[in-house]
Length: 583
Figure 1 (cartoon, rainbow, N blue to C red):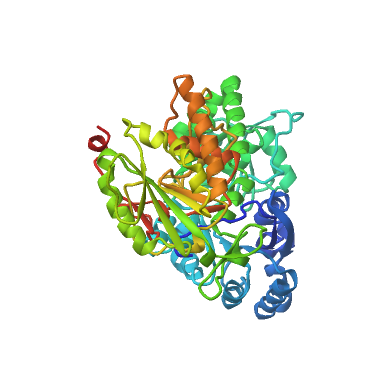
Figure 2 (cartoon, one colour):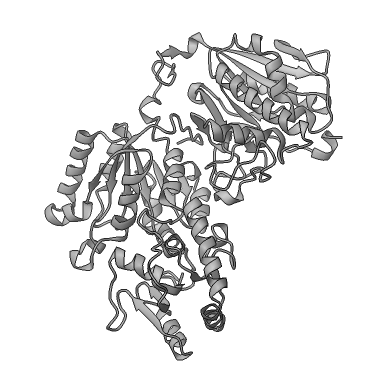
């Protein structure tokens, strides 16, 4: 990937080849693996899955050797013709040969995605070396993601997080009859923590490898039942590296079962849950013991937090939510159609092929008052770099009498802030008859500058740009309109992405349809004295929530001038004196 995250046909069903171990560490005596209990059923039930096949590289490698297993993988790709290969890797000695994965990435339409589990301590030895073989990598570690960005790999790496699989659920008929439980291996300081809790007088049930008898390794169903039975589910976030506090799957699995979670804090955990409201945290052994005592005594407070955590987990933290973002990032659905022929590209979703040499694009820019000076630089850069089709018509809505040469000037009276940006879609619709003569329309802020070539890769029915401030952020950080009284309101169960208002477009008829939806929302709110929190951008996000884009562009197409996102800028959003410009 080159800084573009196109996600064309974002709801197209996918054939997925899943690579993961069925048995924990490849040993049937240990029971099924985490990935088999979580990723595999989640992929089977995901809304976009047409068919999923399981390739157990560990079992096949044990039976035939890694080299033979890798050849069997290539054979399976040829037979199944998957859209996506989604792998949960183990180690270099047991995984498929990396050259086999590279061959799939480079010589087949299949997009290869690797989920990496321990980036915080395996970045140099494991995760980073994989980057030249895979199309897309994931990491759950913010610190590792920063290293990927520093190494110039942001365009192929997405920060994601653990989540809950479909079978984690509330069991309403199960009584809370266990005071405190912990599920996980014994290592590091975990034994000392449990011993101190017990010495304080609390009964703690522990399950997992390494604990003294009668501890046991629970089956998946038994674990779900335990989370429901426990008054307090304890989670210790320390990783193999005891100095690093790592988010675990347990942070999402317990709330998904309606259980009360008492957990150590961890890197970025506050991005996923509100502490003291949806989960509870502790800061040391004394704080842990005090909170166990408090929440065992205060049932209502404990159950209120558990219920809120359950609502949050199911609304935002299932693996289906994670797959929506990862697979969109990977452009799985459009993989087969991305190669141009003889410098051209066929476009259209299910329509007859049309070559870009036959098409015309309109670039719509609103620039009045002080913003007019920016338009000159924008159009100068567009002439050099903006060529999605053979012909481009520049359209300037302005209060100035003059316009740069070759620009179609549309007279437009200036309105005080935020009138010009809020009403931009009204302006487009006033010119609807003329704009319909163009094949594609793109709306662009005046205070932008093209800095790299843009071609037919941006063409689609509805095209939106991921906002640079939110493209790696969890959903609850998005700046959607949260007032239910506004037409721009997006509820807590809606929306997977937050889009920038600075650059969007698509086919002329689709863009004008979106414009009508935004105009109607703006007018309805205006009649009731309301303006959405981020003006036209808020209404655009509402419209794209109702009718999702067929193509998403990365923040390369709305790249803050002084930012360091690790992507290759295509279109800069220039730094400017906002207060002065808006006077």
